[in-house]
Length: 104
Image 1 (cartoon, rainbow, N blue to C red):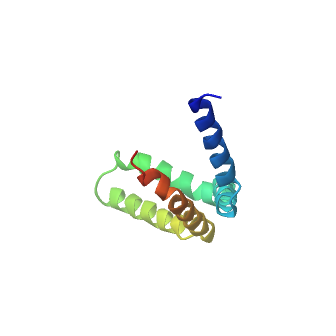
Image 2: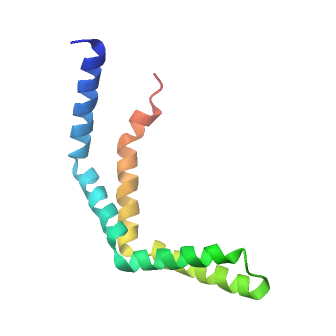
Image 3: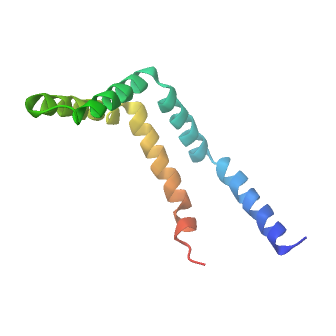
């Protein structure tokens, strides 16, 4: 077995071990839940539609639409499902931090 093949096998094992961690499984479940939650999809879609119209608006109407967009973003960000998802994501990122900081 060549050195490259051996390294590839070790990397595949590392990935398999990583994806089997409870923290990673929870992150994946929460990510899927956020992406499939009808209410969150509705809020995000509504905000994106409004944001796309901002450049066409002037004055107070523009300010009003920007305010609604901010409120929708706050509502999205404060949803317990989103909060749990972001917390799980941060936990997974901390797990891989030693790998990303390694300078070979």
